[in-house]
Image (cartoon, rainbow, N blue to C red; front, side, top):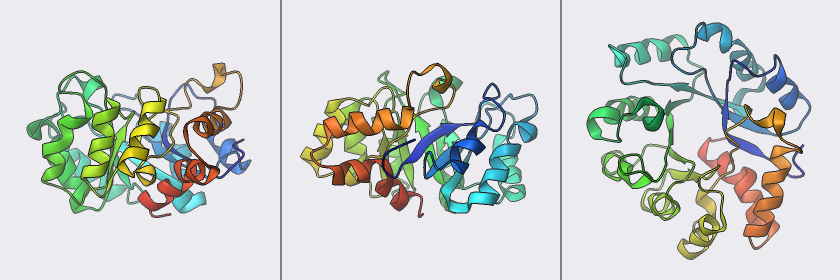
Length: 247
């Protein structure tokens, strides 16, 4: 249980997660909310896998944000995305994963999906890593054409590029789990005046069950070592997400 208000900006529906695990987490007050990414493409029965997520959204409303995966490799994927969003109005965002899909970040590969998000006032969360074509700055030209899009640079990688993106676009925020959760992210935020553009995420809960401790409190305590005061820690752990997700 986090010792301060905590919104997890990067949390997944995984088929291997214990039944009702996420429900108990929210009902217990362990955290204040989460951005819940729905089951991955290729899941055998996605509606069944997502049933708990839909129930949590109905119960907790804005405390639970829902993002659906999009795989541009699928035939007629835009028609499928449009149909899914029309039949699931509770979905508030879109997840794209260039690395897993082995699709470099280009206008052709991801521009149409980002257009759908912008037209429907949905946010986009992505995965980034240092390799060319999958790095944060690869999104620069796409975002330049869609500067009003709410966009989360998931994993914040590389750090300097991710923070530059956050400063370049008003609605671009950095979620630095795993690849970006190091002192440099917070130092760059200080230099660029961007404490308001970073937000906490775990990329959980798949690894939680083998973690010796509370993953949310672990992030709080590590953030305390990187940020100058508890004011900035609270911004990182909740307030910035509240702004981005319009809580």
